[in-house]
Image (cartoon, rainbow, N blue to C red):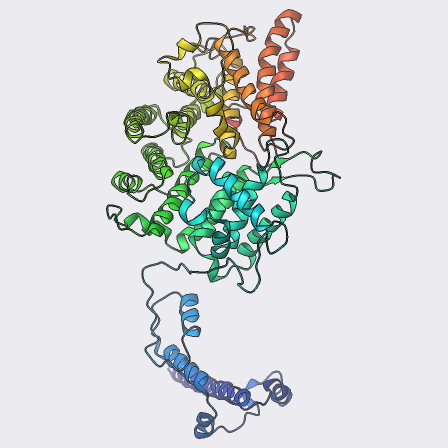
Length: 633
């Protein structure tokens, strides 16, 4: 008991000593503030304080005797602000996160003696700014001398005329003017210029100073990652990131003497898309962009900026769902949820809506269907999609198609609306969902055994065919049945009006079309379908038979190759070049089957498959469907 009492006494002494030291340190801090106000350098006094104290005993610093009256006389209005902060710290009246609290305290106007308890409206931390970064330094292509004002406007015109409707997250009335966008956000200005510069000419697509524009864009990304400021947290920055995901920069060999002879390569990979989507999502969450879904879009007087925020949010939702988990090069989970149907319909039909807003609303409803499927199967990445959930999802997709076909038909939309977004996304979603279980099962079965998930196989093959066939004249003419386009042995005729959207498409469109061709060739190689695209009940044993030139399989793969040939013809730098080679190798694989039969050898077929697959496995790509089937690098 005596020992416990002594411990308590010792503890009390230590607490008293600690309190005494805190008082001395506070006095020293106040003294230094007073010295700075009166023009004496605190740095000049610091050595004397340190030198007068042994390093192992901080309790005997030679501190001056301070008098409160003297200190108060040397205070300026700024010092009053500091004393108010000190009072707030002592009282502990904090209502926000630490960094928010400190930022708010430091931002209070001098002499403001009001209550320092911080209260932020909801979570909206968006900061209005006329520049993405430091306003004293313009960081855009015009200020760097890369583009003239007229050139920049020309690139903006290219973007809004050729690209915007394919991913309509931009505001035509508010962002079509290049100079106004430049004043609003240098990052968005640079991003749109970069997209226009990569499709500047149909002969030599890239702008002569395209590498420099890419470097400037990379500087913006570097600043966002390493030196972000409050000015960066705006919808325009989220929009810029989304545009760079859907139309990513093309890297070319700058060591080449001419950009006309170097080989372009899109930055689009799993790792690139995944990281950029994550960055865009973080920025959107920080400014509480999702709160725009609670706006009353039934109000005809609604501020157009609210509509623009909704465009950005819906585009982010669709990208978050399609790229990680449905592009089949990742199989990664999505993280965002689409708004209710009532909100989407009200947004798409608002009196101030753009033509692309209805497309975004329809696309978001597709995202909701996929989200429900992921919840139902208990796997957000959809890798464990069961047959019942898949059947329900397919039925919902069919219902969506009927309903939105009627909506667009009654809205006065372009007659080719079925060859545009969101119907292009519908075909891809069908293929993606049905290919998931096929790939998993094909990786485990051997030839001559039961085919995987017959319903999914039939739906997947049909979706792959329709995804490629949509650019034919028969598809645009809405021939009622797929077989109507197969009655003769001629090649499918390309519809060049529909093809124009494919020429300027987001990179994921080219990937989906390349994948559709690969999918059909692989399921044929595995003995799951015949050359007429009919599914077998049992996988066929032995080598695949030759594919006749007049067969639907050969004709659709040949048509897919002609699509890429058409948009790349005569172009030195079209961004889809690498996907063109994938489809060309798929067609070559079919032709190898005929050679194999003629030469009684399977070696050429193996070479054809290897060439096709090698074209897919670029660094950063992870084609989950192929991995499940047992193919790897």
